[in-house]
Image (cartoon, rainbow, N blue to C red; front, side, top):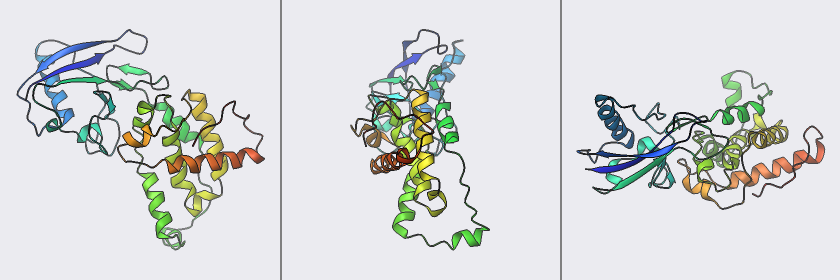
Length: 259
C-alpha cells in the first residue's frame, strides 16, 4: 500500500510548526499505524533527515501514550482503539493521511507529535490518597460490593489517561478524564469517605491547568478508546456540588460545569 503523509513537524513549544509531506510505499495492510511511522523514520534516517518524534510504549492499547490526531480524529478512524491498535487496512491504497499532535493549551507540544500531558498527573496528585485502612488483602476482599457497582467502577478505571477526550472536545475539557478517575474511587467503599473533597480538589486543579468547560457535546466519550460513559461526568458534578455546599477551601467557580 502507498500513502501520502502530511505530518506536523515542530521543534518545540515555542517554535512555529508546519506540515511536511512525505511519500511512503510498499506498506503492508497488516502493519500497525506506528509500524508504518517506524518505516517512514527508517527512510528519513537513511536520507540524513530528522525522524518524526512520537510517543509510544506498550503498543498494546494499555499505556495511552500513542496520542495522535489522524485525519481529524483522535487515534484515527476506528472506534474504541488507540493509535497503536490501528492498522493500515483501515485506509485505502493511495490515501492522504494527516497526522497532528493533540491541540490543547494544557498539552504543549514537546516536539512534532509529542505533547506534555503532565497536567493529568497534577490533577491526579490533587486528588490525594485514600486514607481508609482496609487491612490485609483477605480483609479488603471481604467487603461486600454489588457486582453492578464493581463493574461500573472497573469501567471507569479503564481510563488510560491518553487525552483523546481533551483532543476531541471543542473546549479542550478534561471532564471525562477527571470524572473517570473520581468514579472508580468513589464507587467503592474505601474511596467514599473523601469522595467530595477529592472531586473539589481535582476540579480546582483541572481549572488551574487551563482545561475548558464541558458543554455536553459527547465527543469525549465517542472518541475515548475505552468508551467511557458520560454518566461519570454526571456523578462528578453531583459530588462537586455537594462538596461546595460545605467547603470554603476553594472559591466558587465563575462558571458551572455542565454534566
